Every structure is written in C-alpha cells, then in structure tokens.
Image 1 (cartoon, one colour):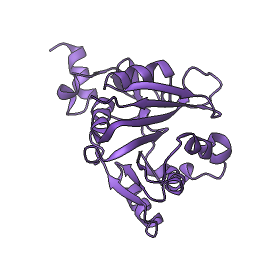
Image 2 (cartoon, rainbow, N blue to C red; image 1 turned 90 degrees about the vertical axis):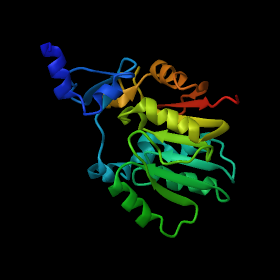
Image 3 (cartoon, helix red, strand yellow; image 1 turned 180 degrees about the horizontal axis):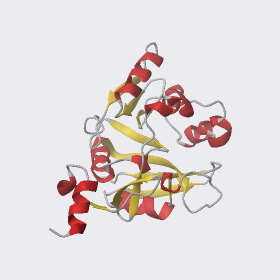
Image 4 (cartoon, rainbow, N blue to C red; image 1 turned 30 degrees about the horizontal axis):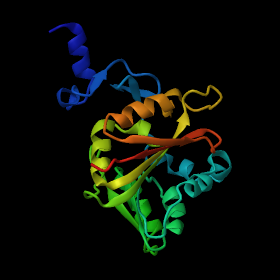
Length: 231
C-alpha cells in the first residue's frame, strides 16, 4: 500500500471508507480536523468545556442574537429545532416567540443535554433531545424550522446530518444558518470557524434546499435562509 494511503488510514476515523463518498482527508489545520467536505475543511468542535463562552455576558452586544431571532418571523405555534443548542442560549430566546409551539433543543453532547434539562426543567415548551453525529434525533416532518447558530461548520458529517434535517422538515419548511462571515478578514474568528455564503449555498443545494435570502443585519455573521421545496 502506498505511504499516502497508509497515512490516510491513520488520520481518518474508522468510518473513513463509508465517509469516502462525500469526504476526503488531508493533514489537519490548526483549527480543523483534516476532513474535507465539498472543498471545506471541517472545524474542530467546541466541547461542553466551553459552555461558559456560550453564555458570556457580552454575547448580546457581539452577536445580537435577539435581532437574529426576531428576523425569523416566527409564528406562535411554530415547532423549531435548535440544532447544536449547547446551553440553550438561543433556545430560550426562541421559546418566547413560540408560546403555543415548541423548541426542540438538539445537541450531541450528553453534558449539554444535562445542562439543558436542568436549565429548562420548568419551561414547558423547550425539549432537549440527544442527537448523533449523523442524525438529529428528530422524527420525519416534525418541525417547520431548523436553526443553526455558529454550529454548522463543526458538523463531523455535514452531508448526513443535513439530509436528516431535510427529512425532519415539513414541506416548505425552512433551515436558517448563522455563520461567521468567511469573506470578511475583520471577523476575528479562527479561519475554519467561518464560512462564506458561496460555500454554504453549495452545500445546502447538495441536499435539495433552495436558497431564499441572506440577511446582513448581524455584526459578524451571515444569516442565511433556505427552504425545503414541496415535491
């Protein structure tokens, strides 16, 4: 076997042969994992150890998440999936907007689910769900909106997870991503924790989503809207 092939086997996870349909591998960047999807290296994951950063006091000023939530134009009875919910910072803001609906806070880290369950034990319209790297844990046609705030770039299996989320969406449902702007050198975030609008459009189109609009109302992030077409 060639040395390059041996190197890939050591670098790639045990599922590399399955991954090869969508992914390739290269030496990892300082903030990446060496796994490449559609030309984009997937970033390292911020684990539950960084939970305090999600709840930092200056987040409202830096990211203006309330403006993000307001831009979603939610209806009171909407069922929203907060994908990669972390500590539930965004889930809480969403829940206020859907008093007759529900926020399903999905995370793949059991430690985050523990935080969510403790934090929202008395909140009736937020439900925590433990997902997997390739599956959200949501049932088919169970939500009409999926929101991902600063999380998509960390998906270890973005193709499989997005296909799963498309299945979870009701017809004409929406997926909205907030991602730090990769085109802007003055957004001082690690390079692989930023994405360009062009790249996100390409990756969403690959799973059958149609781009609707991109808002530039946030200080550092794109807010990109996609729709699941009615077949």
